[in-house]
Length: 223
Image (cartoon, rainbow, N blue to C red):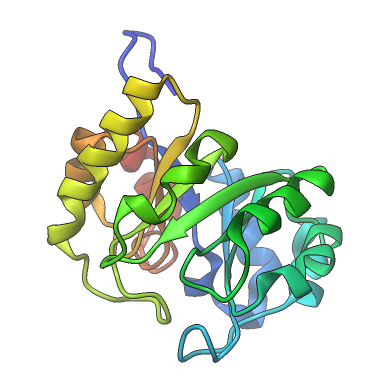
C-alpha cells in the first residue's frame, strides 16, 4: 500500500488472539471501524504448538461482524484434514507451516481448489529454503518473529535479516507475494520490519491492549 507521496505504508492485521474473548464480536467490530486492513486469526491445536485457541465455529461466529479479509493462521498438525472446515467458516486466506506434518504443495493446491488465497509461515529458526519451492504459488509469506504458541512474546530481532532476504527474493523474482511479520510487533520494531522490506504487520497486544486501538492502528500506518 502506498501513500499519496508514493511511499509504502504498513498494512495492519490485528491478531484477535489478544482480544477479549468475552466480548469477541465487539472487539472485531471495533478494530474493523478503527481502520484495520484485515483480521489475523491464530488457530492452535495443542500439538504443533503448546496451546489451544479456536476452531471453525468461532470464526463462523464473528464472520458477520466484519467485512475485512480473514487471514487464518493454521498452527496445527496435518492441516489438510481441516482445510474444508476452515475454508467454509469464512476464512479468506489460509496460512500453513512447512514444519507441520503434511505435503505442502498438495495442501496449497487444495486451498487453491477451494477458492481461497494461500499463505505459508516460517518459524524463527526455519530458513526460507523450506518454502522456496512454493513462493511463486502463494499470496503471503508469514515470517514469525516469536516462537509460535502464545501471544505477548518478545520480538526476536535476529529474524530481521530473514525479512531482508525474503524481500530481495520476492523483488528479484518479480513475485506478488506479500511479506507479513507476526510476533511481538510494536511501533518501534514494526518500523524496523518495514525498513527491512515487510508489506504487512500482524499486531495483537499492541493494538488490543492499547488505550486507543484506532490511534495505534493509525500510528502503525504512518511508520
